[in-house]
Length: 249
Image 1: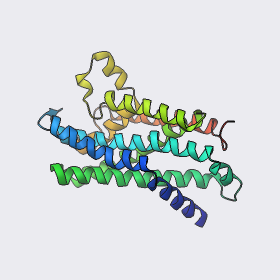
Image 2: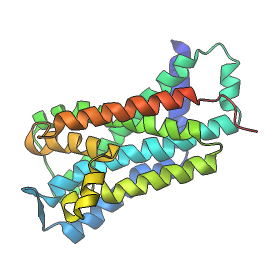
Image 3: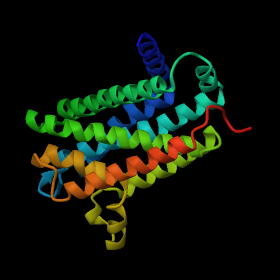
Image 4: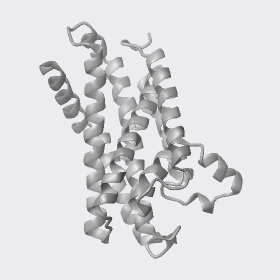
């Protein structure tokens, strides 16, 4: 067990020392909150103020960024630099690596979530009842799991770090604009709305947003749960099937 905590600590420090991780997960979401507050702050979405509606979206967007951008590139870099291969040669079980990686992702994402919500509360007066925060916590953890699974699927299928970053950015920015996280899907054409509601970001975004705004999982809660679990299983199976300890030569 001591090895597990040493590995988790090393992974945490590696993340914290990466400038791109700091930017995408600490600076970028705060920047988005400021921009959206001053552009759309006076509007309402589905009976809620824009800030009530958009803060959960920024939280999920941040989680997706950590898993699909930071997580995929991080694991691909460990493979390319031979770190994974050296870990394989040690007595450390592979399950320790997976467990430590997941723990670090959960801790980092919860810290980022607290940062986003705290900034929104202090700077813009955003608030939510405590019981709704508690209800949203399992959905936030589910969003982390979905994000990590998608990121590791990208990592396993990508031959090198550049491609992993490019694919992760493409999928991330598509969902940023059309998955209803920061722009309501109701503002989009009907065909795009139907497509958006099938995306993993829409499913987990709705699952996190509904408890914070209405105190329940919303009318599409079961459907979104099924989508989130389906994406997690599919991505996880692909990630395991194509996982490599060494980079392609």
